[in-house]
Length: 126
Image (cartoon, rainbow, N blue to C red; front, side):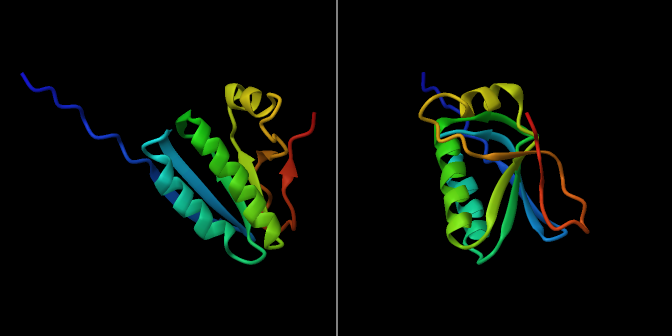
């Protein structure tokens, strides 16, 4: 008997503008099989000079190590181009992972999307 395994589900990605910010919202699992699509989308946004990118993780069911690496790379790419990248709707488990030693956890995590007429993000305090 031959077993067939379903192909890994491709994450669904959406992008939208929110004031001066670009919001990338992945949905589903970001694992070794699906992170390349996410990385390409994130690279496209963080490659824009002066872009302010928000990655909304509220609909991500699983975030693998490669996805965390992609986020760190995106943060660094945005900063190198006079922009910024922030995370939004990060669950408690992922926050814990990002705070582990060696994780380069200097992400700005937003508690809410910024008002569209405000110039900057509203980071989580505490």
